[in-house]
Image (cartoon, rainbow, N blue to C red):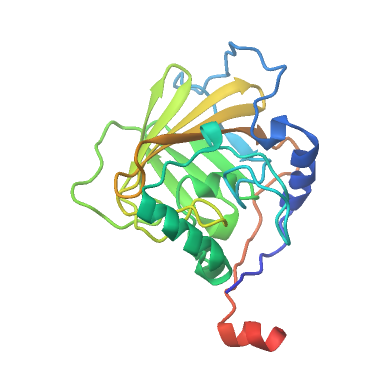
Length: 262
């Protein structure tokens, strides 16, 4: 299966050219960003992260270092140490996923991509803050995500959510989001990196400049990995005066339709 996106006014693929030309856009924080940055505040005194943001890297294709191939731009990985600590059986499953990625990748079925994958899809997203929650509106297939900031715990039991259940708090100027209750049907990228329903993600959004966030996601899944591991990357605020999230429609082709086009 494959999908066809509606044209996005945010020009996501133009950003990839920028990524290839700038090391900062490929996963490394900008060299000129100061170590200590005091972000603006909302009316209730919290760091103001509101705006339209976007990752400028190639992690949507592969979160590890990768060479260029047909339909895939070369890119620097976002995994710390460039190593994903798979259990032996899971490493074999990842290999099979990669071989069958044209039809097996959940993205080709137009499913919600899960967390953290949706953060580095090549489409923008908008952060809105309220006293008791943070909303993230994603251009990609109209996904809306709620991060509860009122101190309430995750609901009990295991729940199969595409995007998980998100509970956040502040650690200084860093937004920390704990996410559980996933299904096992999303991947981390188009290269077949995957997880089980036991996935636990801890995200950290740290403002490092007026238009930069340092994003970090720590991955834990004892069914698939031998230890927790982390990916990190900068996010960039879109500053165009007329920037907005546009319509994105996804269409999954059937095998017969694909065969007819060959």
